[in-house]
Image 1 (cartoon, helix red, strand yellow):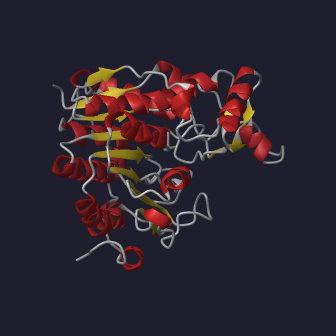
Image 2: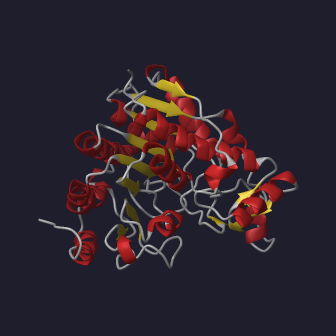
Amino acid sequence: MNKTGFIYDESYFWHDNGSGALHLLSGGYVQSHVYGEDPETKRRFKNLMEVSGLMRQLTSIAPQRATREDIELFHLPSYIDKVKALSEKNGGDAGRMAIVGRGSYEIALLSAGGAMTAVDSVMDNEVRNVYALTRPPGHHAEAQEGMGFCLFNNVVIAAKHAKRKHNLERILVLDWDVHHGNGTEQAFYEDDSTLFISLHQDRLFPSDRGYAEHVGEGNGKGYNVNIPLPAGTGNAGYMHAFEKIVAPIVDQFKPELIIVSAGQDASFFDPLARMMVTSDGFRRFAAFITALADKHCEGRLVLCHEGGYSAAYVPFCSLAIVEAMSGIKTDVEDHFMDGLGVLVETLFPHEAAAVQAVIEQQSKYWKFE
C-alpha cells in the first residue's frame, strides 16, 4: 500500500465566509477585502501538491459526508440547527467570527466527514497516514457555538468516531495551530482516554484560554497539556517543546491513534500571529509526530488542516509536512527561508523558561527527565 493518503474535495474551497467582514469589523471605515480564512490559501497548497508531482505518488481518498448523528457526537442540536438555518438563508455568524455562507452546512458536514474518513483509512490499513485538507477548519468550534472561522470541530468528531467505530481506548490529539484549540480542549477536558496537547502562541486567540495551569478536571487531570509559547518562537523553540514535553508524555500515554490539528499559522510570514516557524520547521514537526506514530500505534496518524493565512507561504509549509509524512522529497525549494537561520534556529532563554513552566505544571502527572 502507499504509505500516505491525501483527502480534499473541491467544495471545500467553495465555503463562502464573506468578503465584507473587514469592512464590518472596522466599523465601516475600511473597504471590503478577502476574509482572513481565504480558500485560495488552501487551494494553492493543493495546486502545489499537483505541480510538484507529489499528489500522484499518494493515495487519493474521497471524503464521505458526516451525518447529523456524527456531528451530534460533540455539538448541541440547537447549534447544528443554527448553522443549518443560516446556510439555507443568507448566511451569518454562528458564534464569534464563525461565518456561515449559503451552502456552508453541507460543506462543513463534508469537512468533518473528511476527518472521519481519514481515521477509517488508517484504522482499516488502507494507508499508514493521511493528510486531510479539510475546510472549514474546526478546532475553535465548541459544543454550543462556532468560533474563529470554525463551524464543526473536525478533529473532535473524528476522535469520537474512532472510539465509537474502532473501539479505541487511547487517542492523542495534538494541536500545533498557532491559536489555542479551545473547542478540542472543551471536548476532552474531563476525559482520560483522549490526551490533548496544544502548542500555541501565548494569549493570542482566544486570549483567555490555553494557559499552562489548565490541566484538565476530574478524570481528565493531566490529560490536557497546554504549551503556550512566547511570540517570536521559531523552529528551535518549538522543537525544544516537542522534545522536552510532547515526547515523554506521549511515550507514557502510548496512543493507539494520533490526530493532529495541523495549522500552519505559526509560520514566519503569517498575518494572524507573531511566530517564526519556517517550512523546514514544519517538516520537523511532521517527522517528529510520524516517528511517534510509528513507535506507538503502527504509524496510524491523521493530520487535519486548520489555520494558516499566508497565501504565499502556507503551500510550502504544508508541502513539507506531507513530504515528511510520506518520505518523498520533491524538487520544490523554499527560497523564503534564505537568511533566516540565526533567527529561527536559536533557542532563546525566555522560550526555554516557558517550556520549563509547563513541565513544572505537568510533573504532577507525568515523568520528565
